[in-house]
Image (tube, rainbow, N blue to C red; front, side, top):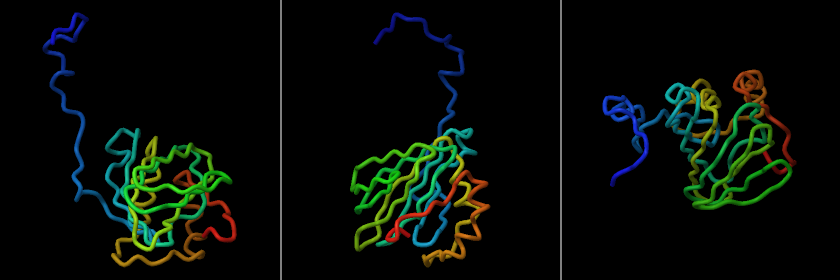
Length: 173
């Protein structure tokens, strides 16, 4: 194929600079937050702050509590199972191959509606919230719930990561 448009010189680094990277399926730093097992695959440190990416395994009947991100958009891609999402005051379900986008400043949460652990991919742009999981997630391989006391202890920590916990409905915890 021949292009008839201006192209960079042959010695321009655009032709040879390999600035991207690959993360293999068994790579990532695993952290547990209650009944969520998160594999942090890509951090802001690796993307100059542009993007973070995690692979989450969520135990049946569990998920996170309603919250907002004050500076980051968050997106989810469901790999398996069925999740209920909270988006402001709206609730909806999402299943395999569904994509969910939540802009910064929007109250949101999710939970696994199924009887088996379910997976979803989580993206942050710009990066930032993944650092909470790396710094405060547990390394113990047995998921156990985070009681309200633990969440209350983490309020200031979450704030430092641009996250604010918000009340949910009585049946959302």
